[in-house]
Each structure stands twice: as C-alpha cells, then as structure tokens.
Amino acid sequence: MVTQFLKVEKGKYENLEKAAAIINRGGLVAFPTETVYGLGADGLNETAVKKIYVAKGRPADNPLILHISDKKDLLSLVTEITPVAQKLMEKFWPGPMTLVLKKQKVVSDTVSGGLDTVAVRLPENEIARKLISLAKTPIAAPSANSSGRPSPTRAKHVLEDLDGKIDMILDGGSCDVGLESTVIDVTGLEAVILRPGGVTYDDIKELGIKVSYDKHLIDKSAVEKPKSPGMKYKHYAPKGNLVVLEGEYEKIKDYIKKFPDAGVLTFDEYPIGNKIEFSLGSINKSVQGSKLLFDILRKFDSLDVKTMFAVRPKEDGIGFALCNRLFKAAGGQILEV
Ligand code: TXA
Ligand code: MG
Image 1 (cartoon, rainbow, N blue to C red):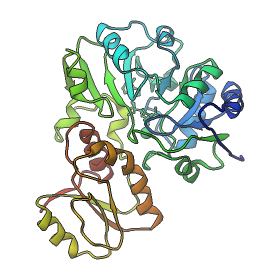
Image 2 (tube, rainbow, N blue to C red):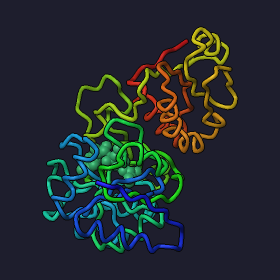
Image 3 (cartoon, helix red, strand yellow):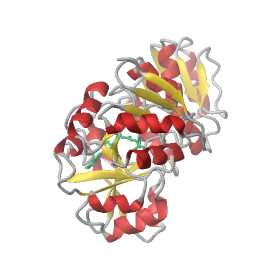
C-alpha cells in the first residue's frame, strides 16, 4: 500500500475532505491531536477498526478510544452520562481527557476489547475535530505508533512506524501536549484515573470531585490487573536499555561519567557533558518536558544508542504523567545513586 503524506494547515481543510472519504470507505488515516498523533478508522465499522490492530501490531484485548467532535455525540455511544462525567466534560472537553463509561450496543467488542465500557474523547485540535465532523462518525484512534514504540508527536514519527501500512498521514505539525490523554473511569460516583495525562489529579479535585488513581499507578507491587488494559504492556520503549537515575546532581553526574558513550536525558539545570545528551528543558517546567519526551526517545533510537540514563523528573502536575511514561520506557528500572 502507498501511504499518502499530506500537510494540513489551520483554516485550509481541502485535504481533510480526502481523509474523511478514506475513513468512510473503511481505510486508515493518521491525524494530529493536541496529545499525540492518532491512527483513525470509522469507529462504527468493525472491519475498519480491525485494520488498526493489524497495522499497529496491537494486542486484541487492548481497547480503543472513540473520538467525537461534539459533546452531543457521546449520547449515542454510552448508556448513561454519570454526574461525574457531566462535570468533567463541561470543564475539560475539548481537551486531553478520555472518559470511560458503560457502552451501548453500537460500540463493537473490537473497539472495547471485549469490555462492557467504552473510552471516549473530544479532542481540542481543530484538524482532528474537523476530520471527525466531516466523516460524520466517531473515529476510533489509538496513538499512531507501532505497538510498544514511543507515541508519535510529529507526523514523521508516524511515517517511521506505519509507512506502507496505512492509507494516509495528515501532517499538522508537532503536538502541543506531547503525552497521551488522561483516561478516567467515570462509571461510578468517583473519578478513577487509569492513565495520567494533561488533565491532572489536582485539576479534577478542584471541581469538588472525589478522585483516586487506579492502584497499579501508585503501588508498583499491586497484583490486581490494571483497569486500563493498555497499561500492562511494555510501552514507549526505546530500543536500547534505559535506566532512570534519582539522587543529588553531583552523584548522578559522577555515576554517568563512568559511561561516556551512554545517551543522557536530562534537564537544563543538570548538564552531564556526554556526547549524546538531550535536555527536557527546565526541571521546573514539566509541561515543556512532556512535549519533548517521546521525540527524544525516538532520537536515541535513530542514533542507535545502546545504553541511556535519564534524570528523574519532578512529579508535580503533568510531571506525574511524564514520570509514568518515562518509568514505563525504562521498564521500571529506577536507580537511586
Ligand atoms: O491522547 C490520546 O488518548 C491518544 C490520542 C490519539 O487521542 N490516544 C491514545 O490511544 O493514547 P491508545 O489506544 O494508545 O491508548 C488508549 C488507552 C489504553 O491504555 C487503553 O487500554 C485505554 O485507553 N482504554 C481504552 N478503552 C478503555 C476502556 N473501556 N476501559 C479502560 N481503559 C480503556
Ligand atoms: Mg498508545
């Protein structure tokens, strides 16, 4: 298959008509959102949705998010909009937040991974919303990477992973948030965060909603299986071995100095001096670091780096999500020096 690669600029939407036509005839289109690029198919066409799993090499029990362009579109997909869901969607949609609710029958088991719930998101990115409204159907879209690789925050990342496997890639520039959306289970009376992201624990608490993290996010020894099936898989991983270091700057520096050929992922305040070294910006600006993380993990791969060390980010605000993705990329290897 030849993958068409088309640029889209704000306000110039001719290419989106072509993209919507592909979605309507059951094809696959990668498109930008404010979080990461998504790999879209008609969410109500099961044959089309199955193609997503094949193109990504994704396990069949890992459900997809349905993307809508209007809050009203939620009504036909779920059995009930709970009060917690109502409050959250009023405040954070459109935006980097995905809500998990009980699904209606129109949502196939292929989309929901066999669960009785469905994950839905109304993205902020205008290109994404325009595409969904032109296609006149909810668009099922996971991140547009090969399963296990870092999520794509630029169109060229999608091309690296999926060229020849999908019909079209829409290039809308780099993603603003850079980490995937916050996934929140809102089927009950409280909000349970299944995957941390741009909408944070504190953001939710401020609305007067009772909120907690799914156990596996805070307790590494939790044996219960995570409610968000995707969280159990090895993820975001660069090809080499990545270890996260925590401790005082001088100690971290001394430790890494023993490995001059190792790649380093650090912050402006903590220069190490290795040849292959990238900064996530200021350690006090997790928003900026979040935007850069996946791009840098991919840079290590393109430089064929075998060993990498990352300085542990702060965990405040979106920093919690940044740490979550980095720890996963490191396969849980965190070393105190
Ligand atoms: O920001 C995002 O969410 C991006 C963009 C493209 O919207 N999408 C994305 O999709 O990250 P994906 O498929 O890479 O991650 C979806 C996550 C997975 O961890 C999956 O297990 C979880 O959402 N999920 C989907 N449906 C669910 C459900 N019914 N219950 C619990 N978790 C669910
Ligand atoms: Mg993903």
